[in-house]
Amino acid sequence: MSTLEVRDVSMRFGGVLAVDGVSFTARSGEVLGVMGPNGAGKTTLFNVISGVQRPTSGSVMLGEIPLNGKPVHAVAACGVTRTFQTPVMFWGLTVRESVEVALAARAFGGAYPPLPARELIPCGLGLRARRRAEAEVRERADAVLERAGIGAMASRATESLAFGEERLLELARALAVEPTVLLLDEPLSGLNPDEVDAVIASIRRARADGVAVLLVEHAVGELLAVADRVVVLDHGRKIAEGAPDAVASAPLVIDAYLGDELEAPAGDRGGEARVTP
Ligand SMILES: Nc1ncnc2c1ncn2[C@@H]1O[C@H](COP(=O)(O)OP(=O)(O)OP(=O)(O)O)[C@@H](O)[C@H]1O
Image 1 (cartoon, protein in one colour):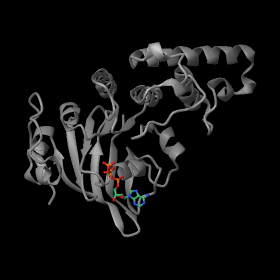
Image 2 (tube, protein in one colour; image 1 turned 30 degrees about the vertical axis):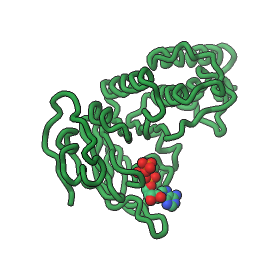
Image 3 (spheres, helix red, strand yellow; image 1 turned 90 degrees about the vertical axis):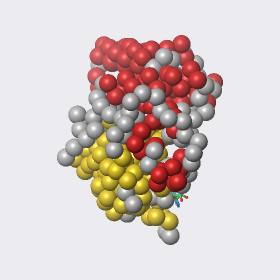
Image 4 (cartoon, helix red, strand yellow; image 1 turned 45 degrees about the horizontal axis):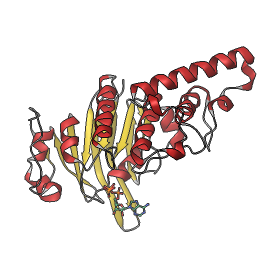
């Protein structure tokens, strides 16, 4: 169980300082909400954490392991997985095969473009061991799909999925590898109420399993209801951090992002927000 620590990270694109000296930690078994208006730097921050982009300065640590400077696949191998604003699908595979690929890639090493699991299992294993490995991967994939509530989709081609179904599959695939850190970029956008419930249930299960979940989401009510703590970005800077209720009622956050449209989140989620001027 490791803590993800973002230390004074900045990311500059030419004249745009997309992320400006941001620091925070995300602990094992907590959901950290990351909020902020369009262009605040949320996705860029995820890109830096997941190794898609190298920060201009600052560092990202997973426990004692520095993540910045590592390529995407090496960050993933450290247990950091993510989903994207637009779900990334493995075309040409079924739903089950998509999860099998993730499982086999973790066990035997991946390939890009993704290959069916049987092609990732080493040839040198021998026929019986290969068959056993294939059966195990398949069994695990079915268990993952059941757990995510999409077992009925297992045999469908990824090309046949509706947008919300793609989101559910992408999340199931990310969870299949039992990540330490899960980065979710707007996982609720475009979903119907049942799909929202399924994603929230998966997030809660991941937290109970000890995953550090970072959640970027514009559905503020849902974010505040599921997050244990919230970080707010604006123009690349962290402007607040704290318990959901406290952050949601901080004047700086209301001015920058929430306006007066926010409904109070359910339950007792009070506490102090540290506002960073
Ligand atoms: N590759 C890039 N090159 C140049 N500018 C970029 C690049 N990526 C992001 N930016 C800029 O950095 C800023 C932060 O963008 P980012 O996508 O991280 O914001 P965001 O908070 O995720 O926004 P949204 O909620 O709309 O997804 C924006 O001004 C954006 O235009």
